[in-house]
Every structure is written in structure tokens, then in C-alpha cells.
Amino acid sequence: MKRLLRLGAAVLPLWSGGACDVLHGSTTTACTMGAGPSQTCVEVWSNVSTSQVNTSAQNDCTNNGGVVSNSCSRDGADGGCKKSSTTSGVEVSTTLWYYSGADDTAAAEASKCAEAGGTWLAP
Image (tube, rainbow, N blue to C red; front, side):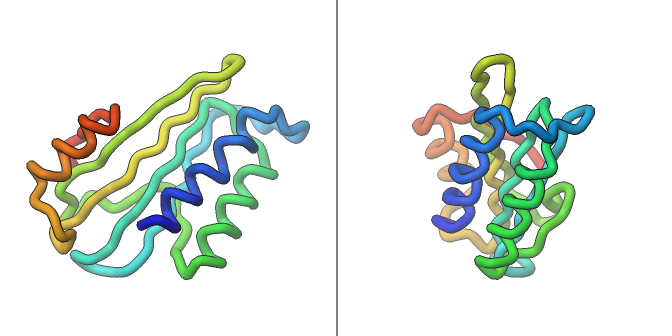
């Protein structure tokens, strides 16, 4: 899970750095680590899309053994912890999805999310 959090942290500066190759529209990149009920997945969404960010996020994911997709699966998910920020008009939200094989219960995950300043999302 620490690798997933690093992925989100690595992508944020690229979005807020104002890369030159801006594409139209928003973008979501997801990275799933593991499989089945023991998986974790992080979705990073931004209102600005750049090919540099997309490529970097995808490479970070696959280099750490993850699978890249457009969104995290909601099948078997306990819920997701979403954190958002806005810098210079660039909105970024990161949602870490937890699944039934996680060590904690959904209630404990939701509580930890709230303590960390996140918003708990139902699957």
C-alpha cells in the first residue's frame, strides 16, 4: 500500500507543475496492486490531462508490479478514502480503495480515513 501512496504523491507535483503538453479534459489513472480480496487500488483524477503525467503514472504503477486501468474495481470493495486538493486551478483527487481482504473492517478503514482528513466513499 505504501507503493500506491507513493504513486499518488509522485503524480501530484507533475499535475501542479503545469506540464506543457496539456490535453483537453480531465483524466483518471488507476493502479491496482495484488488481486482478489487482498488487492488495493489507487485512483488519481485531475481536471487537467497531460501526456507526461499519464505516462509517468502508468510507468510508476507497472514498475512497482501494478496493473494500470482507467478506474479501480468496486467489486468486493469495502470503500475508498478520497482526498482532494486544488493548486493554481488544478484540481487533484486521490482515492485509495480498500477491499474485503484488508486487515481492518470497513468501519475501521472509514474511521482512519476521516482521521486523516479524507472522505469515505461507498463502493
